[in-house]
Image: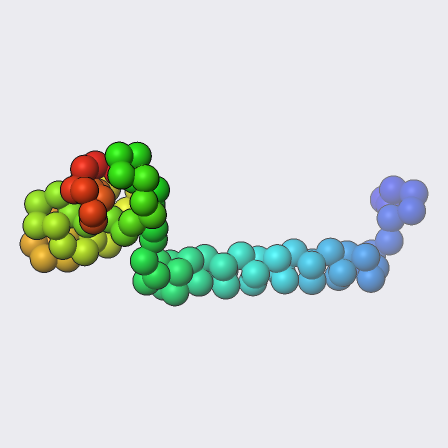
Length: 93
C-alpha cells in the first residue's frame, strides 16, 4: 500500500542530496589528511607569557625540537614525552 505522494522511483532531489553528502565527505577526508600529514610538519609558533616573543617550542629535557601534541610534545632527541618550553627564555609555554 502506497502512502499518498509516494512513488517507487527516487527523484532527482534524492540523488542530488546523496551527491552533496558524498562531496562533503570527500572534503572532510581531504582536510583530515592535510592536517595530519602536511600541516603538522610546519613549525608552530607560540606566544611566550614571560618574554613576550613568538617562539617555537622546545623540549624541557634536552631543549631540542619537539613534535607537538596537545599540551605536550615528544622530544626529537630522546623520543620521550616532554613539556613545551620557550626557545628563548626556557620557561614553560
